Image 1 (cartoon, rainbow over the protein chains, first blue to last red):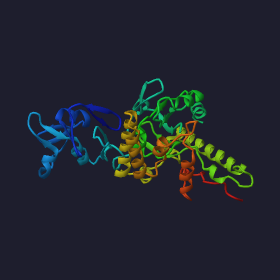
Image 2: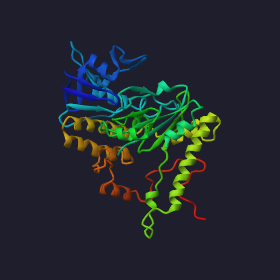
Image 3: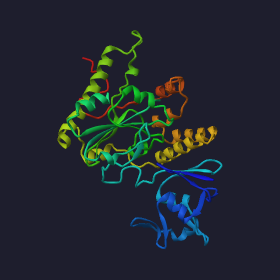
Image 4: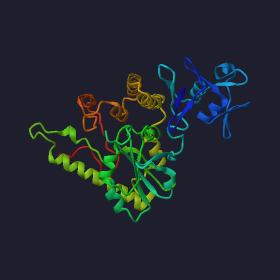
Length: 140
Length: 227
């Protein structure tokens, strides 16, 4: 079993194949984890496609039926850090630049969804129309 | 401190959203019960907000307007470094420093009220250029530190404490400015607070640098002015 930890969600990918720093999985699993679908023009999400670099195609895609894709190589290509434990059973994805820190030229607050102590989920966008003081604290 | 503010601003379209950066389920609950807040209090086990808003310590505040635009990026809110000013003869923090910390908290709360009433007309609402200048930009080391912090949390839950320790140490090495990562993952005293000898050593190592840099705001200063 391979566990992939993204910023806000964790995915179990039973059929993933870890080889050193590569993490191969079928294109459906890659889409489930990353939100990008493999298409002839590249890895696509909404209207944006990221072409597979022609000279390094074998790092990103291999085989037929099923076609395997390397999530680690693709995520690094997006600019997001990829780290794993020694056993290569747990992989963690850092947010790529566009979704992590604020994109250039905008001061839009990134949306987030978190539970309260009763488990009820709240998103920042639920409070649109109100001024919000987002105040962090901790028990430690 | 926020409950009174929310009550004072009941007539405005204003709310506080408090978020506990707490990995351990339940750690924040006694604190929430004690405050019995009327505003939402959320639990951020994986410190997602640290990633999204560039938060390195608590308490911090981010001001966000009605259209979900940032008005002031993450800054220290309501904490001052009085602990540095312990007078050797008195054996405690002098009254002047305690009064100063109280005054600075009030100044900050007044600034929030001014913004709640006057919106962009408030002198405390920053321009886009000022926000961009203060906002942390993308840093691959910090992003990797957060990825390793989350990986460490999963390894801890998967009963691999030494694997977790490796990830937490590497996270703190990559993002040494983050007290949130370090304190969350360091040994706690019996009361759940990370304030043992290792914490004291880390504070001492700061030297002149600030643990809680005060918000850059009119009327806010670091220490009482000696007159």
